[in-house]
Length: 257
Image (cartoon, rainbow, N blue to C red; front, side, top):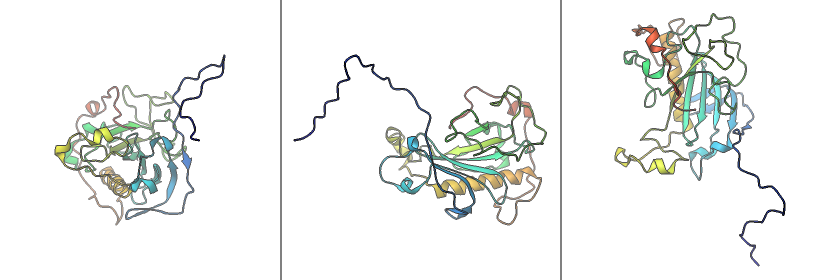
């Protein structure tokens, strides 16, 4: 006899429980010595699955992690791939206070510098240390890379510890544009059909874009060459606008997390 599909009644005198928001949970995966992401072989510092952000149904995302953190071997910059609430992936690269673009808003970077990444940079912020660890744009653990380095102050910027300075500044991009397929965004996938069919940008694609961004940023640094693997030319002259304008922060400056 089939079971009833009616919801169970609560016990007499029992208190009903209201739904409350919970912090994203995650499952850490074993770290291999090397991990292949497309054509790149990286040494991962962190690999996570985030159930709350796992896409629906069948697709290339089934075999992908939701968060991968590593240090790019050529540029020595921290890199991060993080799945967004839409199910799409985003890539991030951190630069230190010595970098000429440290503290710049994504849309304040002069176009003549030639930074190219999937549909352009959409994110720029300090480490989000107050966000849940699984989804924060920050290093996977306490990093000593920038300790002892003189910090630069950004007017109006306070980090999570209220010190008024930041160790790393993250630039990022997300594959959530009109041409991108969103595994958890069916309604949005039906929008902008005139732009053509949407394509899911898998982790190999996002890794390639992230590594390319890291090496372009390194080329602008000018402190050291990035080696034979670098794809960007070194010694690019910087024609930056007045820094005070570029550092003018706005509320809600983060476009995606």
